[in-house]
Length: 158
Image (cartoon, rainbow, N blue to C red; front, side, top):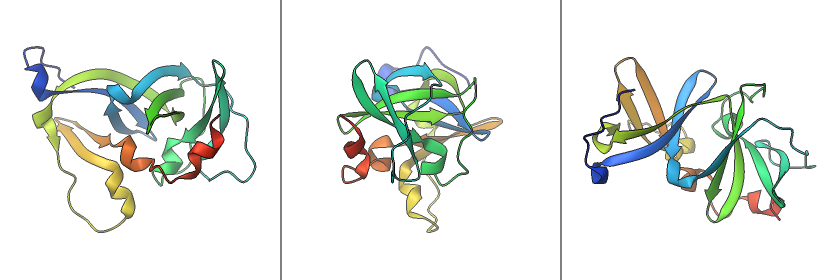
């Protein structure tokens, strides 16, 4: 991905890009608190399918979400390259398991294209757009839409 340092900061997006099953996704860096290496989570009985469990993050219990499962993909098999991206969504911290973090980038807002309108799934509301460049496409995710306030994740946080 090309980064143009001469772009006006009002016309840019700061993103963190990561992989899930060889597909590339990204989110705004402003939602990210930190990136951690993979560590086991304590399972919670009867948790939603995308909740791996909970983890103690410096005294705060946070839910750990299998982002692949949340996006309707096959569940992730965490390994030494996996990462936990700790995000803050609706005022709550949560860990998102990704296969690997690719990069932190500043891109021109004009590179973000709308997702083609298809009426296949309600999950399309999770994608804010597509960043298309020569040889690659990155799905730009909207975490606020993905984790609505009414979802049960808050029950797993302290």
